[in-house]
Image (cartoon, rainbow, N blue to C red):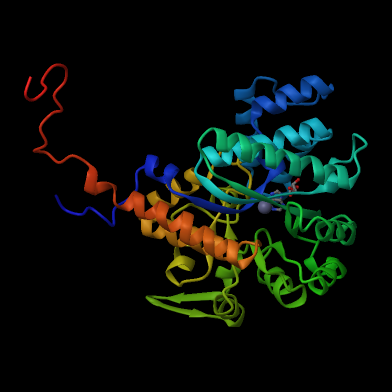
Length: 387
Ligand SMILES: O=c1[nH]cnc2c1ncn2[C@@H]1O[C@H](CO)[C@@H](O)[C@H]1O
Ligand SMILES: [Zn+2]
């Protein structure tokens, strides 16, 4: 038998492969059945569908509009059912369980605490409820035979004016479950420089942050996020492709693209989400293919599992179909993500060396133990030697 590697992984191998996720919205990943149940229990009557399957389809279709603004409108319904302590604990626990069942071993999950105050919770109570949910989900995952570690990123909404407050909140909880900060929401008209105070504060505190940039808006947004705000990572960053010129087989990088590659700035790419908001045309044409070839620090992410009907495994399946990626490529993306995580260096290294690499090594060795064509069938029943 020949070593079939490097071969295209099967969906089952993709699911079992250890994965690291840096960009996933808590309010973009609820189970449709949970939305329906919480809506019923809390008296929220504005859901467009009350059958879970139809509701899931509604989210995918409504988000599939080609515009980031329309995509974001769908979050009104998920946020509406995330206004009580119990709901937040439940949603966060299910998030950790769902990611773990999909083979995610490390996740940074983000949400905007300011969007969960309508039921009377304080910002602190929101953070504590979500943290409690993540711990519960990690424990349930362990009981089900999966290992996952989840950290929270606190998001400030870019159209609002609470970023300083949220940055302080992220700093206060940095040793208890919160690993960093982010800004999200409509990009056009709301440049990241509106929130310079918050970023300056976090830098002075030696804390970490990522910025949604270069998704619906182009290079100026990426440039500001990096050179004015000092972002550690870029949420999406797909438009960096606008600073890369291709003529025939020749590729040349502009100053900003060079900077991003030279400084190993992590790009949190979310292919399916980009197709829905119009930031990319198809998986085959998604900039991730070129950026990976050019050795940018690219990572693969889900963004919003509910709105995009996706999971980490599904994102990888699409990329495997489009680009023929192998387990080695998957490992490369996963190690990139782990290197770019906001937890301490020693923990990242241990995750790479003790969890991710052994996980891929095991999958890559599977061909050695699959029975070849000449293998005799296993005898069943009474055929015992010497009797
Ligand atoms: O792809 C995105 N781009 C910008 N903002 C987003 C995206 N996905 C979700 N959110 C926004 O982030 C908030 C906190 O999780 C969500 O409520 C949504 O408004
Ligand atoms: Zn996002």
